[in-house]
Image (cartoon, rainbow, N blue to C red; front, side, top):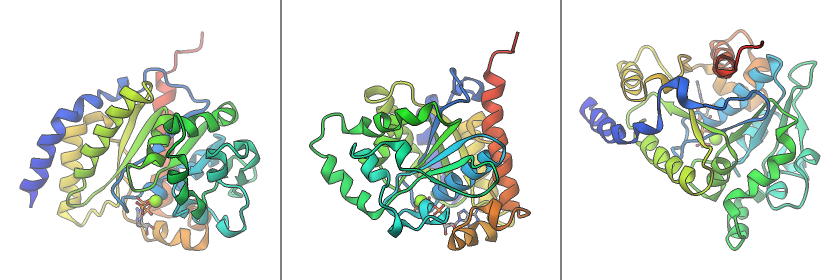
Length: 295
Ligand SMILES: Nc1ncnc2c1ncn2[C@@H]1O[C@H](COP(=O)(O)OP(=O)(O)OP(=O)(O)O)[C@@H](O)[C@H]1O
Ligand SMILES: [Mg+2]
């Protein structure tokens, strides 16, 4: 079984040039208006869990954060407690230019400071691909729509659908960087090679500034030898691009969305809350360390 993992990793070697040493990943890091797409076309790897809880943790650490739910499944929207059915405005209308992004936001009440905002999704978004098919520059629609929000937020996180569709291309077209969650399981690395290939194409044709933010290992179960093996293989092949923070499998993370809550509201003392708080610190720390020293 591990032989197959190794074989996949060999293919990944060719793609590792996209993942230089961590210190070089984001040469022009800025704290204000960093747009991070959370993407992996493989389903169920923890994209939405990461997007909602990383956004919540960044906000609770004082960074004004916008979460963009770009998945027609609207899991991030419901997971944050916004009732999709009652929403008149969503990312769909914003993407099609029918309404401005700043007029379409919901505030998520996780703290007293109202630092966490959501651009919700709706099942209507499922039709967007067809409607956008004949549009000129359709891969840059989200980038254009988000422009007014860039100066308003420290971080803008985009939760992508599990596909390499025009929606995901829009996210990569709008983003400064892409964060790739990788589930600690068999075949986990297979999807990453396809995604890195897409990132390379997007960089060449749509968004030359796009960088890989980092590879995040998720759903880690320390009791499983396979989990430990995937961590070792990922570190071997992606090196410093792998976050030091590993997201463990944690029941509270699975339960929180069904209560329409992020992990901070649902179970702030859980391992899941601790893991995502560490990830938020790591994401911010990467930027701070690259900024020039104040004179
Ligand atoms: N660390 C974790 N511990 C326990 N359960 C988790 C964890 N991360 C994610 N889950 C659960 O795994 C499932 C898939 O997670 P999630 O929805 O975040 O993945 P996804 O990549 O967004 O899926 P999709 O590709 O369908 O959008 C969900 O039921 C979620 O609650
Ligand atoms: Mg999802």
